[in-house]
Amino acid sequence: MNLLGLYHYWVFAVLLMIGFYAVVAKTNLIKKLIGLSIFQAAVFLLYITMGKISGGTAPILQKDVTDAIFSNPLPQVLILTAIVVGISTTALGLGIVVRIKEEYGSIDEQDIQEIDRQ
Amino acid sequence: MTALDAHLPALQVVVPLLIAPLVTLLRPRGLAWAAATATSLLTFLIALALAAGALAGETQGYELGAWSRPYGIELDVNSFGAMLLLVLTGGSSFALLAGKPSLDQQIEPGRQPLFLSAWLLVLAGLSGILVSADAFNIFVFMEISSLATYILVGGGPDRRALPAVFKYLMMGTIGATFYLIGVGLIYMMTGTLNLADIQLRIQDVADLRPVLVAAGFITVGLGLKAAVFPLHVWLPNAYTFTPHAGTVFLAACATKVSLYVLLSFDFVVFQQNLMGHEAQFAAFLMPLAVMGILVASAVALFESNIKRLLAFSSVAQVGYMLLGASTVSLLGLTASLAHMFNHALAKGALFLAVMCLAMRLPSLELDDLAGAAKRMPWTMTAFVIGGLSLIGVPGTAGFISKWYLISASMELGGAGWLLVAVIVTGSLMAVAYIWRIVEVAWFRQAGPEQPEIREAPVLMLAVTWVAALGNIYFGLDPSLQIKLAADGARMLLGGLP
Figure (cartoon, rainbow over the protein chains, first blue to last red):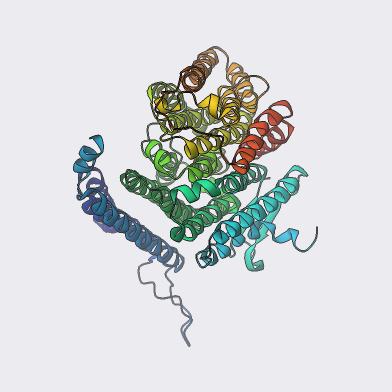
């Protein structure tokens, strides 16, 4: 079994876990958002990887070339949408962090819980 | 079928989606609210027409741009989807019609158009999930509705909404991304995103590891979005600090739409194709459903804020819906689907009454409710009717779904009696937590320092009463929701029609 030949998928899995760890373990809200972005980026890689065929080229018809192998363009289109979604989520998240900083004077989860408890 | 009828599935989404940005421009006072309410009512009419079509047994598919599958994007409205569209657009219309004074109270006029625009985007996104027949489109609509929901939740005056919405954003995004991973793995194995096509093609690759992993990712991701116990921690605070009108809308529909996707995937796509899926699904979700009912109801018993109390009750109700589905029987699924409709009616009426109370009371803590029934008798009576329906007293809508749930549990034989015990215990706890509110409002004397309070505004009260009477009407004549739910359950168990 060629484990290293599937290294794209290893990158996907490792990135996914790094991002997930940051979301769960960090108390700083900005760091959580960074983790979330890494988490999403890992999924983008998964999609891009599955469309690639070794030796495959862009799916454009060329003159005098009949035996070209095309990579599947659909996952890239899908992930373009997902990237837009990811950016919107990050932007909204950062916006909320700014508001939290204005209201609470801190962006640390524990501080905020402390303030709310009083 | 007239020419327009054929386009209804698309219009259901397009109308609110197009009007949402226009609403932001309507600066003069009240105009944005009028436009949003009119749009919401229009989508309600469309949903009524679609539900009528579903009742008549028509398949209401729609090919965008007349491209057929597998190339084009398909929309498809089945009975289950049509029932939830009714709930969704109805909930939105009720909340908006009644909510004007409450919105004025909680959101300054300058920001109202933006808030209502986000509201319409939630409506468009959730409708999109219900009409879509394409796994990736469901993801996109899910994110449209989620992003707009975060704005609704964070739009209130209470600063505690902000940490709540941040938590919701984190968990919601992780749930949606899990779903995206699952869809990606399925696409990898089948080469299609159309649900009907996936169902056909997955047979050849079923029980290969990527498909099993996909089933896991999709179930957990959607469980997170649907606030399945123990993935519900985002829900109580999010519901509590949302502006009251928004809570009416979200509590009636948001989690149910995620459950729709969960059930569609697990039953339509995986059920017939994965070995032993039935047993795995039941073994995984039934314990969660049972614990959700018991733990969330128990927490509700000790909550002091009535919005938080009702939010925990919502987590318990998600448990009932899952419990019905995890029996994997026609009766159980019918119960589960009908409970979505009935619970939306009950919770809608309860949160509408809470919105009326919030207009006049200084806060929604239980102690501040003392003597409220004397000063706001109409509001509190509507609240009690909603509460009875939530408990499942005969003659209310809640009774119908509890009855079906218990019948479905008894079909299981010996172990089923344990489920019956759980359902009855959950209902008794509901009696207890609703009674706590009733007791304070009716029998405790108000302190002398309390300001004089009067009834809520007339329109608000009228809408609340329509919702409360709806609970009684659909409890006495449940044919509508039972027919739609039974058709939906047959569709889920038999695959796409």
